[in-house]
Length: 495
Image 1 (tube, rainbow, N blue to C red):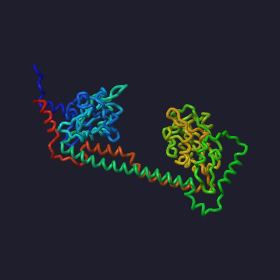
Image 2: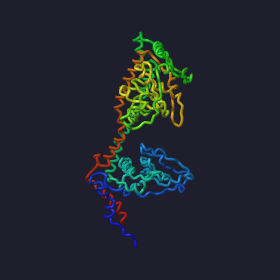
Image 3: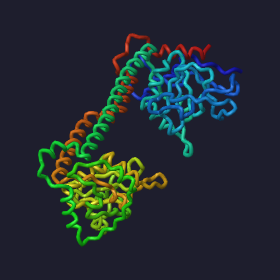
Image 4: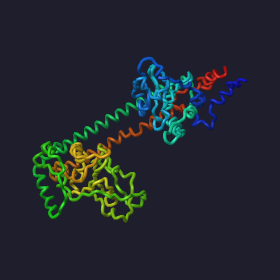
């Protein structure tokens, strides 16, 4: 006895979500359904049955999960086809990875290629006539879809979303013409966002180039050339070094030059009032920080770590703490205009340096991956030396002394002390420091104007949120309800 077919009314009742299943209210001529009701069953495409010697393969790595697009289709020999290469992909399909952490690996297929095969890591969506493929693509890129997939991820070793769970994903379905209008407006708005993002990137590059040029001029004496001409009675660097040497009398510091002599031969020529010195010539004391075990008790003394030095400044977040009575709190104190140097980090970040400010002085200590450098005349020298170490000029020399182990770069205290420093007079140091500090303040204010970059993704998701709520102002309430579309596709099941 054959199974009785359901009526169109019964099928429609099953296809439309109950009120409690709907994520939010949509316009009256929309309908909440499930993705399975708007897409066709997936088909297989076996590479070995294709003509020729190669096929075109999309695996999860072929998708750019930031741009949600195909980065590169791989050409693979049929004889070397991976076991997962089984999903048939056609033009206007939408593919989405159901494997975590690749849930954002989504793409709309805009090429017509009968040799295109996707990995079984993807669900290949072939929309029925009631669903615009670009609308589906945009919806899957939204936080609504992503959150649903996260909530339905299963498994510990290789977490993923089951195809049956994906097919049950709720889908707000407008009339087809409204879907097309939504897509058009979303694409137009997102295009403007991408333009803004590109302008921001260009502005950031301009900042970096401008900063590099200014620092280069500052530490060559070119920035203050006119100032020197107007202040002919200033002291020289030699006189300053003589004063520091007098202060050093009777003190012993361990120092072994670790700079390659070839670097000294390549140092650029300085103004006659300046002198190349070693950082060691200016150091009163330096030490590594505490290696004691820290905790999260905020009543203790905060411990600065390598992640707290960002772009020459201290960022006082993600702090760890030591008990206030711990011996290292006094041993590794921090004073205003001390320098903190990051001796161990990735190659790109090692050597980051910051000046200790008054709000941190005598309230914080520091961890062992940092070196505290206390300079003679630190009130004059600290900012100047910090600017130099963070500049491309100083970093280039420091990075030439890096040792690397297991992905970590290291610059020890002796290598740091070996760093050549272009030293002007006290007065010129103050002039250069004031100039660079004022420039950094101006640059910071300019950067605040382009911090919208951090809100780009939020803005994008806001647009998508409005789109799938029917709030973009494109809906025509006079259009035929999407329920009628559902009836049309469900009718096939009652024939």
